[in-house]
Image (cartoon, rainbow, N blue to C red; front, side, top):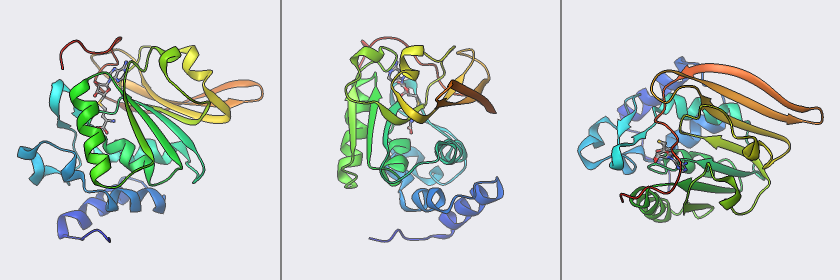
Amino acid sequence: MAAQNPPEKMMFQLSLRRRGISDQTVLRALEEIPRETFVEAADRDQAYRDSALGIACGQTISQPFVVAYMTEQLQLHKDHRVLEIGAGSGYQAAVLSRLCRQVLTIERYRTLADGARVRLEQLGYDNVEVLLGDGLDTATIPGGPFDRIIVTAAVEQIPEALLQRLEPGGILIAPVGPHHGTQTLMRVTRTDAGFERKELVDVRFVPALPGIAREL
Ligand code: SAH
């Protein structure tokens, strides 16, 4: 069913365009997905503001501009298989799912993984699989190689083993830098010659932490 377009949603689109998001398929995906479903009930009236919001387990749902920007930088194709590390609310995975064949997203908090799975199921986004796990422990990630990998928690460096899960020609995007502070969004492309790295923009993400969370 077509998404309704209340004024706040039109402003949302406009602000993404103004900030430089030009890929129509990305803009359409963000327009279609009800972000209010992914935020805390108390924050529903803020769902279409361009800001990050707190979710369960002390984590955050990223700012829509950052979601759009990272998605655009991934240069997705309909037949891609994508790995996300850091499912959080499931919002980024929902966006990805509209633009590729299959998404596997990993989350270290059971509460978040379960919540994301239920939301994505309810919305009928059935090409997303949410797994409870540690995305930094790459040996435990099933499947792959992946056409695209997106890390949505800050890493001090990109694990080499994760890069090895990329298909030739594949792209990985990750916020790289100190856990508490500003990180740089890095894009790594796997070429015949090796890995090509490009610094994109400064961002702030919650840290990627090892292990499945012991708290729920
Ligand atoms: N992409 C999410 C927001 C990510 S917030 C969204 O659209 O809502 C970062 C998430 O990464 C948090 O939920 C955090 O618990 C998770 N995370 C941190 N380290 C992780 C790890 N090693 N493996 C899997 N998930 C991790």
